[in-house]
Amino acid sequence: MSGLSAALLQALHAVVGDAGLITDAERMRSYLSDWRNAYQGRAAMVLRPASSEEVAAVVRLCHEAGVAIVPQGGNTGLCGGSIPDASGTQVVLSLTRMARIRAVDIGNETITVEAGVILQRLQEAAAEVGRLFPLSLGAEGSCTVGGNLATNAGGTAVLRYGNMRDLVLGLEVVLPDGRIWNGLRGLRKDNTGYDLKQLFIGAEGTLGIITAAVLKLFPAVRSLTTAWVALPSPQAAVELIGQMRGLCGDRLSGFELMSRQSLEFVLRHVVGCSDPCAEEHPWYVLIELSDTQVDAPLSALLEQGLGEALEHGLILDAVIASSEAQVAALWALREGISEAQNHEGPSLKHDISVPVSSIPAFIDATDRRLLEDFPGVRIVAYGHVGDGNLHYNISKPLGTEDAVFKAQSEAIMRLIYDSTAAFDGSISAEHGLGQAKREAARRYKDPLELELMRSIKQTLDPAGLMNPGKLL
Image (cartoon, rainbow, N blue to C red; front, top):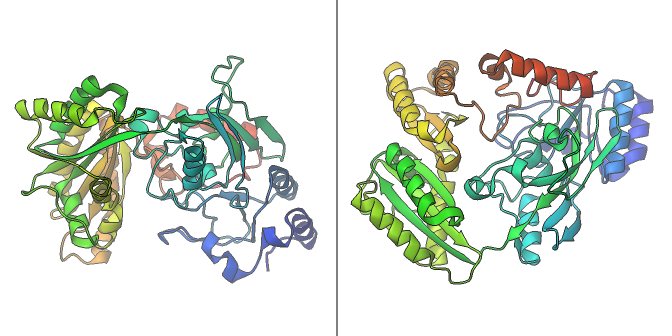
């Protein structure tokens, strides 16, 4: 049974109805652990409201009863931010029934959607009116807009379009006391005080529950070209992206760095993948150019840039895709890294960022220290060079027992985060803090920053009922 009072249970049931209330243990199971099964919790119940008004009523009832709420979208996060604790007293509030596209305003280039809309459905809705919503990431078939906003999601198109924070014009938010803030304004200029929406983006549901958003639309992409490029070093990648930006401007929409170790895992474990190059090379980048014009001369532009890079010794080899199938095959190499690494046993995943100019020095220094202190670890480094975001993941040495490697995880994480801090970086670039990095944030964030964050939390959620134990 839920553990909540009969009166509260009855009141919540009256708000959401049979379709919105789950108390059966088996039906709740998928809401109580993340997709990797890395985090598990218990809950008094799962509530699935179908409107902002129902969310507000639920939050108001829980606020009055002193019951904590854990907001949840597609539950695709990597840091346990949408999983309840082990007490069984918290309520999971799933937004997945709130999946309406409320409005499309072509003249204003905006789309208004509810928090439970799947990212892929949002992309499709934009395409149906000849527009682009550019956020793209591996979980786009199951992650939701609310979760993307709560974690300030990034993905592969940040280089050109920015992360989720840059794609939002307005929000609708249910505050911790149940009031609804209607900030659904599609304005690009509103200089009337604090930009309140930015408080809730990236806050992981700790300040309120995002129920809808006004998002920017962009012209549809009508021309695209993609290349797989072999490099001698990360330094060459930083120099190459600078050169390509100067030549291509906004047409440069993707620039993904991958180590040879990353590629080897994909070639070993992802069916149908093959090495685009005849020889092995230490580093690779996947470059994408796009344009709103049909038949834009992107291939010629890319060939020019790569030719100049070859003359300057920045690249070792390059393959330009000549069909949509080849484009998909090249992206499969990049997108298959995370899945492929899982086949190599336990791994430690770190989502860090440093200034773009510091990427080569960070990789060199951190690689060297790791291999000195933990001989044999396999370093799987890849990420978005244009915004300084690296997924710096570690797989266990061959032949090492899982338990031995797991016992080293804290020390490995500390080494990587210390190195990140030394380069003025961030321990979380796009995945958020959740419960996984909460304690680490206390070590690496400025104490005054944490004090200000706690002050905001105390002002908006003095009872501490919104996603407790996450972020702070």
